[in-house]
Image 1 (tube, one colour):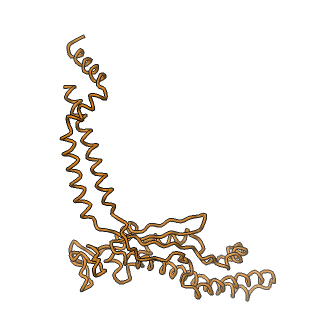
Image 2 (image 1 turned 90 degrees about the vertical axis):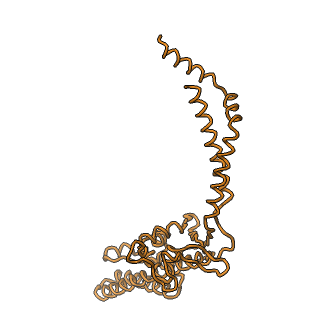
Image 3 (image 1 turned 120 degrees about the horizontal axis):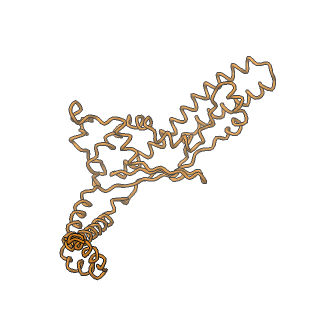
Length: 307
């Protein structure tokens, strides 16, 4: 056995003999290093947490409206399918509502309203005294209501960019057992968080209501034509049932503004911030500093002993 192999075996044997007391001694001797790293991470985390703007969360609990005509429609869905038309059931499905609210087209619709896009994409801070949003002047000129540098690098945000921002602000959860839908919006302004959530609910109801009215109008036109053509009493009776269901859908859509979603807990202006959790941020980074310090001291000790 040569000298190199003998040294390697001696080192391995020595490393095998290292125990917890050796590690404790290393850490005890490196307290100063640990304190420096912990203090550094603590200072950085404090500065970082201070720079993060407060944000607020407005919530709403909703329940889909059950269409009373849906049962009668379902009885004749086979006949409607054979006729080649789609029959709306008043949009009592949570899936349809969730898909609409999270869609890109819906965001494209929302940002057409005044101040929605800049309030999403150009916020600098929220002035608690004036209760207004302070916009980033490099991005948006509030007085002229124009996007700065629109012909340069800083262009007006697209609806795709707005959708990504919107999805980071929106939290949506559905309970299939109770049929409840929980929506929340997080924003630097508690007032805008509430207003945007109001807008989402209102426009979701409006769009679904408009779609169902248009669909039922076309269905009624078709069903009345078929009613005039057929001579069979049983088919006439079935078509009359379908016509009745479509008239009921139109009635519900024209009576109720909250046609699809009923707010059990309406959106509100939160009076306390939801985040950031500055204490947790500082504790996390301080603990991370200690862990990295311990790792550094142990690796340094092992490398020294192996050399």
